[in-house]
Image 1 (cartoon, rainbow, N blue to C red):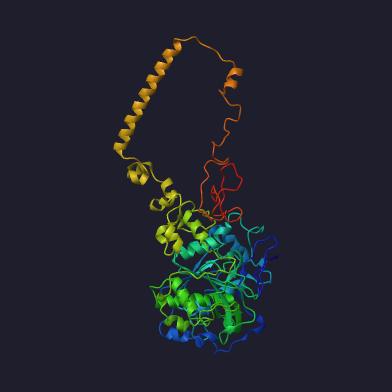
Image 2 (image 1 turned 45 degrees about the horizontal axis):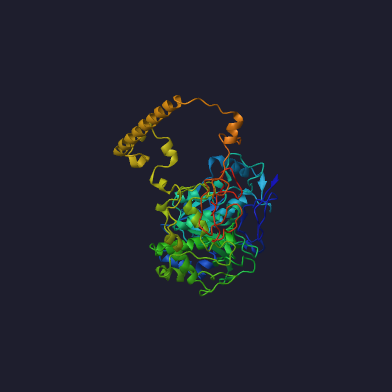
Length: 551
């Protein structure tokens, strides 16, 4: 039996090969676990924080689509009966990973099984869309639509059990964001750590479209979520009954808010209800559901504004602490607070290692530098074309001032058919296309060019005749090979050798320039704004062949 594992309660792990393992940001808190009485079918926060009151007023998240990334959910769970849930499977090429997990031949590092992981996903889903009622868990946004983006269990790239045809970027690194985007997700909630977490590029792409990204912070006392501290990301730690800090959940730089994550009503694998469930895995979806309530109440507000309102109404009173971020959420105050008073700007975390004060990641996305696979094959981004301007709902002010959007080399392709469609078009279609659409030239211009070409040809013929006649009138003189070489008549070097003209540095003659201050992709070093000869970030330092690489 292969021993590859989830991180259980309060531990992150990495594979020996150095690949971060998919980790549950929360788990059932076994030390405090106890059976639930039949009458105890709601967690403490439903009444203590006013979610029951909000539900009675009609705040149920209707009209909002939330996506979660999990190995799956149990659609037969009584808590999810009647909920609007769509399970989006992994690509067919990755389906063997599911088959392997279902066979029970892999476990996580703590001995957890595939069914344990499915149970985790089921409880995460119930925190959002649990339908409530007798002996049923009540979610905070039962009227929202939930997308369950299937991700692999236990096995990671580099393992001998990883299918060769399965592209890791399609399922890891936030790769499931592409399918979530196509299905209209407004909010992405992450309750797993490791390679499931989105990259800085994918996070920025999500933010630029005006969407919200929420993640559990981790359970080992430190902020361990890889996307924590990225601009706009909502990183959530846990509170206990009384809405106060726990002694185990994440604390540190990059926290946004705290939400219920201890003493929770959860469901066991065997179907029984238990109290004492804990983990920021469940705090994150509670915040995601709360944002859905805010969007329902304030449909004209942006998610940037809603997140600003969420932090402004939290218990911190505007101050930030390492323990709770801006504080524990107050859903009633949040719903009552008009978010239009706040700027349409994402929260930033200047002290975080993921801080991007110059918005370099967004600039690179606009310029089309990241590879398509680096972005997880999202539909509104292409390498060298950048992001589709039509889907952009937010940009930093510097991007507006300097005109980043549309500056990619092939940015104009967003107005034409995608390459895959254009390549398959019939020749008749191409010939009948308008000149502007196929990059052609108007007929009058063609006529003028033809006349010019004819004049040039006639001139060349006349000159050739004159030169020939003059050669016939003088004695023929031979030149030895030695004399030819001495005269510079040919060069003994390689016929394809390239020497830079005077004043041009040696190297690939087609080097381009990047914005001063951009990061070099190969080294990650900052290019000093005063340095001459800006180098294209896709070009490896010292490389002479013209080959380029990207993140």
